[in-house]
Length: 426
Image 1 (cartoon, rainbow, N blue to C red):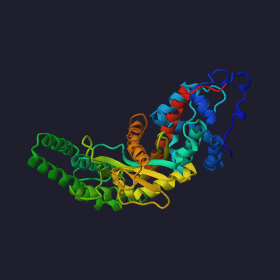
Image 2 (image 1 turned 30 degrees about the horizontal axis):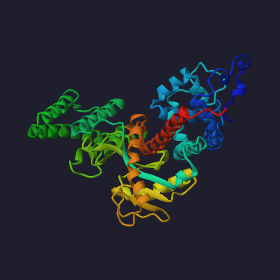
Image 3 (image 1 turned 180 degrees about the horizontal axis):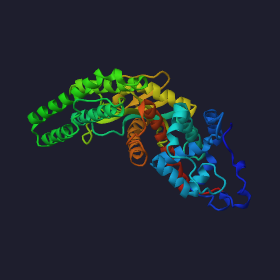
Image 4 (image 1 turned 120 degrees about the vertical axis):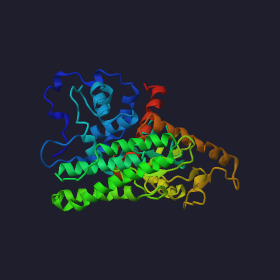
């Protein structure tokens, strides 16, 4: 069954159309007319086919909601609720008449993100690049020179202290035992939370000898629960055993990992989280995933964003970043301007200009290198005005989807600002 259309609505003839009520010079409406919605329908249409049950949603509706969500730093619930109240948002998502009911359940956005995948969200980013060219925000020559940098996209997790991780592990193990009626000799429901809180108090008072002693005692108690659940795992139903083994494996990592270990587990529910240091005084360590960003030299339009799991060296990410730009912008950049973190890297067919470079630099190249720092406020805007500062999506796939959508949302904001000040063609 194909996605539903507006033809199914019977009482629309008696209702005024949105384009008869709204101000057609509004930036969002002008942007709507510049977007290549047909490309989105073609690319995402296969994911929206429904063979049974109710008709699938329209690809434009989901794409429009994702654009608006990341352009306005809105949660799934907020973007759906605002869509109901804002007729300009409804027009942007392809509605012809004013709607008075929620378009979808907010939780379904998570399922649609997974369904369209990384290829689908890259299509959304590519459409914004094409629209920016149609809006006059960038020229064809703007794609020749790009700035490439990396940043950290933090994950939506609590700060990973040892006491918190141990207490959370114990809670999950006890919850698993209660759910499947496993009798534990001791669950430490009263004792362990007080011990975890006391560890924090000792750390705050800089009484580190007492802190380590309390932390050791807490670890011993969590290990007891871990061993008992391991012994009784055969009593669980067959379906639940795989889930229990996964939990026991993660808790085992938390129990055995040391302070200076590599590949530590920083969140029980998000094993993909990494500890990344970018040399900042205000945030020495950030917990999330590294993201590479490519923007145009002058306009700051995002041409590519990609998550880089494993915290690779910045220089090793440059080839993938430029490859993504070539795919999405349909043109390979000739010059890439980077910072000193990309020392020693070469990409065939692309001239690399690096901060601090002196040999063989002309006056024009020097000006381009000086312009490299323009990507820093772009990253700052994506973190303060967009959703790059905290990724709520689950798993490595969630990291990949969220990074690309943050770039698309930034491009939407840039185009709206451009259309807000540009004159309307008569």
